[in-house]
Length: 123
Image (cartoon, rainbow, N blue to C red; front, side, top):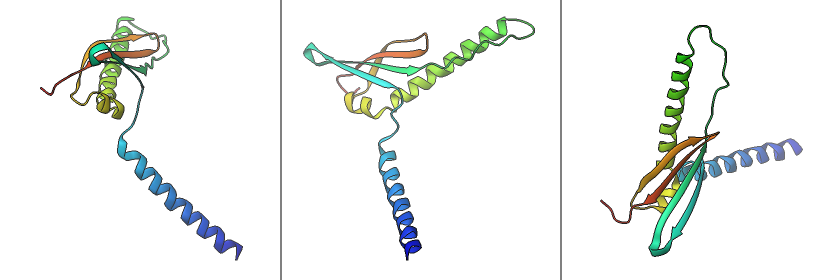
């Protein structure tokens, strides 16, 4: 009797977990931190922050020039990835329904920062 109730409980839990996970994945992932500000005359600004992952420097035999090029290419790839995450951010799509313009994009210490302004009419 006790085993039958336990099996039923496991099945019910799995079904509930599946339904909840299906409902939460529809909105899209929120990666990074989005701060929004509305200035006078409805000027909508935002600041998007994402962690920057840097590899620890390892000594290599040969030239140090290649190591610097690899690091720059890695940071460039992370900036492109940040652009993608920002464009897919569900809260930004709500906040800027007509799209946005990037004002500034840079990497400082261990984070990528993208600042932008919402477009006010569909182009």
